[in-house]
Image (cartoon, rainbow, N blue to C red; front, side, top):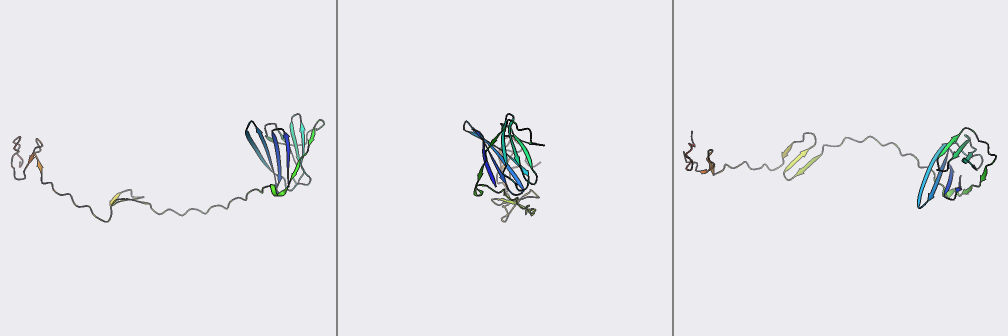
Length: 180
């Protein structure tokens, strides 16, 4: 069961009863902007249609159900629960229009809890002939072993850096002894 009403030229209220809950939406639209405030109360099924009054202090809404409630709706759209129905001597009853059941939306049922996730297998990253595995975080060559470094055929003097031959005993540039 659902009802709709006009609180002011720029503010509407929608009341929906879903057997156990009453859902209240106050929607304001002005200057190209829209704002909606929603409240939900556990009331059970309604015994009678809701009643809405306009007072100087705002709007008063009464829901008669297993758990009857009285609410005050402020001009900004906030909803406050009242302990009892206030005096309504100067109040005006606002008509609420019944909304066909096809236009009301039942609240979504909660999702079932998710099962715990299985531990992830170790991750591996490959680039060229290198691999990195999570856990040891070491780089290791894969498959093909790189060739061992070749000895350089060119030698240099440790003193001056000039090229020397493997058979030389002294540097030809500075005279440094290459075989001490």
